[in-house]
Length: 111
Image (cartoon, rainbow, N blue to C red; front, top):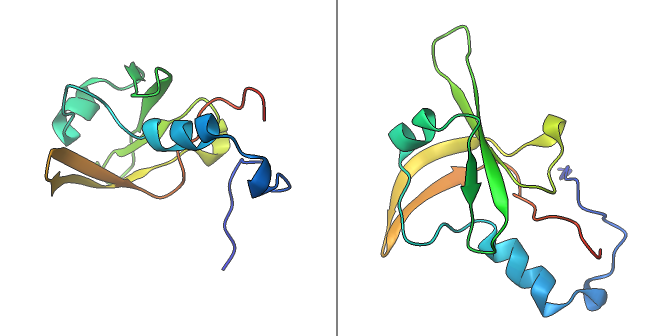
């Protein structure tokens, strides 16, 4: 099974800095507010400030079967390889989680 991603696969893990790892985690977190599926549908094309102080964009695509596809694209993701939200509104101890099918990537500054 292959994993397709935009990340430079040739980069060695030993060269990563704590800030890189922190950005990878915090690009997936919104502080101070919960956005459920209904909220995300209302903000199609809007930017969302994440816990690492970078913006992601909510992207909605209309489908023929009336079931919209919703994506949350990080600044390091390409348009053709954006993360799709597959499961919404999963209860967690301090909020809700949405399951995505690809890694949401922070900006690639300094990589």
